[in-house]
Length: 499
Image (cartoon, rainbow, N blue to C red; front, side, top):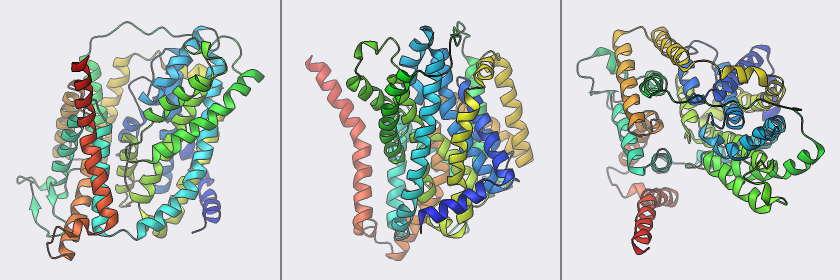
């Protein structure tokens, strides 16, 4: 599979008028929700899933990708202007960005953020285009045992990455795996855990779970908190553009941030937080003006923002080639694929190349749109910060309920939405991550299917699960990833006792 011809074909799909409309809607919505503290791209995609289930699959997925990119960028606006990152990946940006805004250099901070996101996103999208076909060629040779081992690795690493504690992440995962058992067993045709409710024979709808956990749960959680003091908004003073010195100090951090963000984002336990802080630490160490760090160094904004956007592109590599989500938003995008009966992976590249390559090519367009839209519309994004939270979350509750009714008008479905909303609220209240629940529901049945196929081929011999060197290696990595957090925590306690 040649990358350039496939990419050109994808570009011809992405520039179709309706796809361009979907892309600009996605970028605009993504930036808007990224700007609003507490509302991330995962929540927005979850809300739109039930609304878009009758739309064209290619256009909907292009819109979801635009939301992802826009959300990752939008978080930097609040990080810089009110020191409140809209996304956790923008924490590193807030360190120097808000100091620049207080010093009257909010414009250059926003500019280096936008241009760095564009540069990193463009380079990382080229990385997807060239890396994805190679990974597809490798994945074609996977057997059932290899796929099962890969999914076990994804389960363990994702659970250990999300949340404050690996044990809480695994607890969330097992809730999702249990929910995945509800419905008709695909291999035997037997009904499981439906408790006499006909609606449950089709299984738990991913969209209902996602909307309940992310939207309803978040709204209830915000409503339960005491209202704190309003954040002080730093006005954007002076020129919005960068000086020649700003350009000189920014271009190397953009490239270094991209080099951190893309490969780490593509790992099963990557995420955007790790590369952004690595980038910040690197820029601080290499800076010609280290005394500026902590007082508004532009390198401390340029590097982390490039790493942030590159990691967003990196997460699409395992999603598209192997069907493995490595972030909450990637899990929502996987749910978007599945609502159209599409399964990301090697076969999708062969069966629907126009859809996959159209999605990849649309990332170039989304990046360009982000650059063109964001700087002129800074005033609009700032005004969004003035929306009262009670209006915002009341609207989210109404939209979530209407979307669920539109997708599946059923009393049982609405009841499950309420149950999952309460569950999401309790998980947020007690610091249990919600993303592993969705990942467990999506990947659990697939992992079970591959496990049973592997055992059926070997006539029930469990040794078959480790006979393949690849499967044995992946299971070994899973074991190390499982015990590493507990070992490291034990070492920290041991050192604290010695001190």
